[in-house]
Picture 1: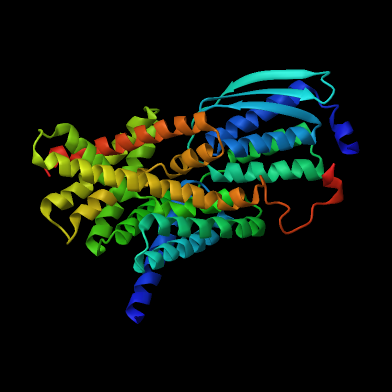
Picture 2: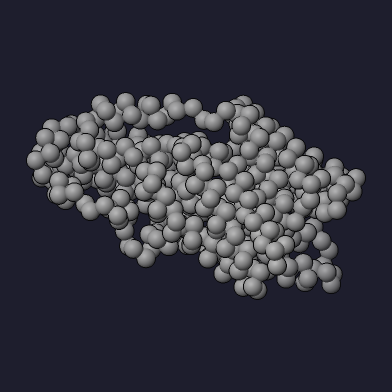
Length: 169
Length: 259
């Protein structure tokens, strides 16, 4: 059991490092870097734990992205930065890159192959990979926007601090 | 409303042009449609004007009116794709709140916009190293080992370098992605060809992941969920073409190596 926990933490660290690279690529403000890594680590570990208990990857990704989305509201207050600056780089490591790669390879194979028995298997695999990829992407986007969707607010500026009288207009 | 009355002396054309600039900058920096809409309404309301917006992938159109409909301004601006820049998105968001709370005038906004646009990116070598490290992390997450991670590091580094250089030389953006993908997969494909490492396929699959357009892909669904169906669809097609460019790069390497 201890070995598994260590593996989990190790994966979390890789999630954090992957998000760091993309955060730098997206040119985020330096003050947000550390928190982005922490969010990615927590989100990624949530997904890994759920996968470990046999929960489907789409649901696991949704849970991970939702946690990142919810936490990003708190961090955005801490650093006075829009939540999406935290949540998008943090969910990038969960983007289904290998599934996208396999889907593309499948398309290429389907386009080049002669019609024989292996086509139906390629078709089934490609469809499955493509659909999984689409649903995982949707889970990421919906998970990240969960705070906005459930609170029906366009801004979280006044979540913790009451709106000043002068702002009410 | 006292503050707003004061603000109303700002010329409608002046504020309209600034709002158009802000919208165009946000669109180029990778903000989603709703964020552009709310930011622009927030700023224009601070000046006592109401704004209607049409945001599309490559152009922004807005009409600014005052509450009494005495003055009216309408204009259109082309937006150019620059690539994601969250320092600008974050800076404009902060600025919009300061405009409301500290009652900035238009000059202050212009100065701040110039400042935001001139903030330098991270040092190039740092971008290259950390993105390559991110590639290696992906490789590890998908089950690669040290050798594959090293190969992915080198492949991502070279691929990103080529992509940056081709962008600098003003190639078609999809072609830049293709060049990056070919470079990365030629390097990682070599390890597959020579059979290095225990899972060389992982190296090939993850060496091009640094090209995956993460922000546009997530913005697709955020826009669709917000009901901005047209923008979401356009972003989707853009993401699809980028993905095909990556796949084409992979395919080129695979044909060259016969793997």
